[in-house]
Length: 370
Image 1 (cartoon, rainbow, N blue to C red):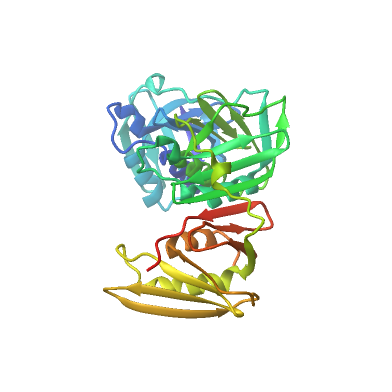
Image 2: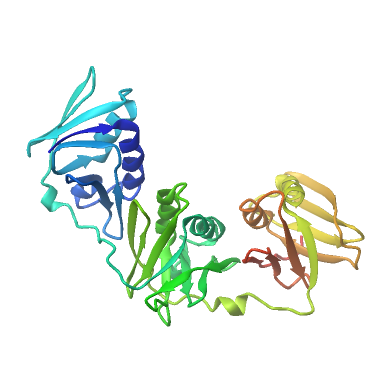
């Protein structure tokens, strides 16, 4: 194999693919990436056997096609530390030689045939949706997963794929995030009774790998795994095993709830201020809505007290609820500060439900009053 690469483009693809590789593994070859080069294209692959990525590398001038296994730590450092615009790569089966204008590195080379195969996308049934919308799905749900719980299903995002669209749900048992929106079913692709729970790590990789792509992606959910393909990237992930909670039972539809419209930016600022005096022992902030304002009161035995007022367009009777401000902030920070949302409240013991006009919903369970 012999080629010349544009260092920055290879570095970007290399760093994205490298995020899949395990830090430690009984299979040392997994701490490498495989570069497969043909006359038509170059494909970089990485995997930890649970999640895998195939990413096309642009900007390569191929002299001799071939395959090479590249050590993530050493080769990644060469790409980061070099200041050359282009680098020459050559592999003779024994070693890989990397040359810049005033530098040369020789790295030992492993057998490319021993690197695990990462599944390609060859599905004829899938859902097609906007890459931009899928990044929004990840951003608005993955933070609510729970990777520490003994309930493994909570460590992923549930995807429900219907004939009309997609619904993504994440929960840690104390709050629940749900995003729904348009997606086109191709070939009759539906999730049906299968629980498509994608690990949070794979969802985060998808968000990163899709980058600023403005095109569409194809998503195929199978019995035990999921495949997602964009123009340059294919990602494979095993699904999380287990039964997901009946999230519709958690997401209440209450006709008797009071609906209060709030502006994201000012409300988020008030929440952050009220949270200053909270601690792990006293996490709650008391929210009192009424009389044209919301009053936020934090109480910390060790750090003092906070009192923050914010004018709002609600003049009804006082409504009080104690919430974890960090859970409230997690919801607000994935929204545009100029955006508005509706908070539905009923009483101090009932969940607070936050809704936007673009299909996003968020449930926060109340805390015992301070």
